[in-house]
Image 1 (cartoon, rainbow over the protein chains, first blue to last red):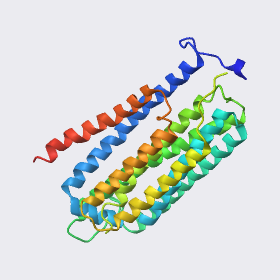
Image 2 (cartoon, helix red, strand yellow; image 1 turned 90 degrees about the vertical axis):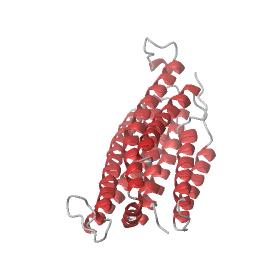
Image 3 (cartoon, rainbow over the protein chains, first blue to last red; image 1 turned 180 degrees about the vertical axis):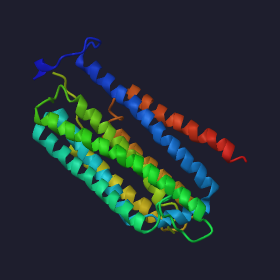
Image 4 (cartoon, chains in turn green, yellow; image 1 turned 120 degrees about the vertical axis):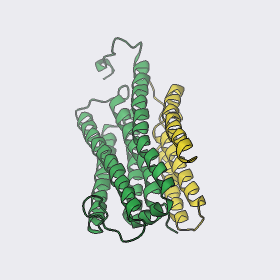
Length: 213
Length: 92
């Protein structure tokens, strides 16, 4: 297997190539942090401007489904980490197994999120479509839900991309593309998956837990 | 043959258990009326969860030091983005 690894000419050895790939993906992840960061900045400013409206609006989100989804995503990060670990050890069957569990959990997240969107729709919480809320704060509450749908929507698109990436990794593992010497795509796919998880870790308290007491 | 450092399965499971405990804490604390302290607790727990994921699942703890610098750079610029924006909005 080791003979099949072709080192790209700009690298001295496989280890240097691996660190360079890690560094590359971390530069990309930093741009992702700033991409979502702009949304978090907009959220912070709007929340400071309309604290009461955000408190009311947050109580309208579905805390049960939101919390379950957080658990699902955190668990998917565990299975992904165990998958990367299997790849390092060259345990192909375990790698494929953990990746499949990760994909199932990712799809479960999107299914729960879709259910939640449907319930939001029937609850007249979708801005611009049929948003209806009686009360003094209805304007800023609608702004909250613009942010809620945009932030969770962009996050869900990231989830979809991550699920597709893991499916590709499963296919590559199936074709025996990885070995204990070469598992870079698995590691990079894992890093992306975890970043999408981290974005949700922050979305959860900011959207669902603003004021529950 | 290169031997890559591999963490024990137990470590990953332990991190997951802590993440789940933190999730329960953040959810539970949200129902206790503490005023603005609620937001502080929620964000503090979110930061703790993110750090656990980055240090253990994303291997920043065992990885090359330059990776930690690049990861920190993302959050540094994010802090500037939010911090400098607030110097305007908090002083109007």
